[in-house]
Image 1 (cartoon, one colour):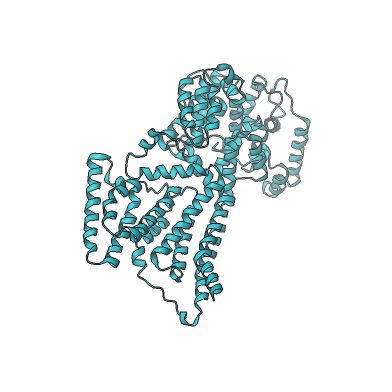
Image 2 (cartoon, one colour):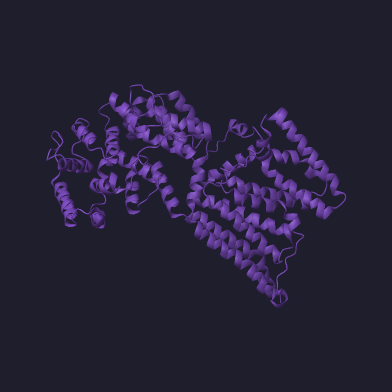
Length: 588
């Protein structure tokens, strides 16, 4: 008999939470690890008094501070998965503890279903960790309240709790009020009135004398639709459900034909359905394309440009940001005009450079194009604006440091390095950067910083953020030998199918340091020759590779075989010549 009881205790007291935790841990740690990567790169926790004070400027700021502290550990995917899974599992456990006695059917089914809903929210990489953490905190405080704090202490600490967790505190307040109504009765009304009056008074004082924030911000911060990944329609019902848990705990589920089914079977069903939904949700919400993009971004931050090109060759993508980073990698390795059409491109040039937008995803990436072509001040401006809008991030701060070192602004670079040194896991980077301070020879000898200082533009002009191509023209007007900028110019002209423009630029290739014609430029030159009565653009001492000539003849022969019918010839041309300018100019 005791053995049976032990088995039942394991099955219905421990196994549900263990299964939930394991599924969540495996998902966030080994499949959707891009979620932790994105969130870790989105903020930078600093161990400093100033940073703490910055996060105490309004109610809820300390919650964000704690969220950033935990998110910093997402630097290691396994640790990130451990934190996320633990919080989700605690939410399930606390809901179960609140709504009924352990072992009952509704104490298994309802909490697990709520856990599935929060898990679903967390599978969106833009749903920041502090939201789930905040929900868990409200549940934890409520459990402590009904277990240990029977007197007036919950009312007394209400203003402090509101200051710590901000708008999420309303969840706890509503839970406490409902608890007083349904479980305490008459005497509870005094606490309800006192709690309401105290919170309203604190709100008034906060608005008029302490934080000087609009009432709407004070009521909801740090909740925002952006920080929950735009999942308003799911998050609000989940938060609302948690808020009325005391009411739900008064409801006893009644299953039809329950008397005819053994209790153990009902409990197994109550566990199996949510667990199956959890597994199905994890499968459906796993986004291969998003994972691939953030894998590319991770390699990009590590300057693994050749690996990026290889990965994207093996895993073709239609994501503009993926191709944008890939094109930068091509340029950094001197392959932009050799392999541009090996990857899907935007005719408008959106895969070459990003237009200025006060939108975070654009701001934190757009400056890398300018950094590549030597517009260091413009790259610095993008990183600085991103910092102003969203605060410090690891890669944003690194970009600020690099641009200041390249420009020789060592005092300012030292300030940024000191900030990076106060982070949890970027102290090694800070120590590396510190070696470059006040020593031009060390900067010049560095493969990356030295090369950027060498190509850094010296002529001043106002950059046109809405038209990046114009910036290339302005840059080349003052530095006509900037090879990387010139590669981008040729690439853009090819995307626009500007034969004459490319033909006019070909004579400059030799002066810019090209030892051979880029493959796609050769393809353009042959197409130009075919359309202009055999006139080949002047390339100086550079000649077209015989192999490209043979391939162009094969392209024309294939097209003629289908009587120049573009629709009929397309499948064969795509298979044999899909990575050429010739195919692009006919079909894209």
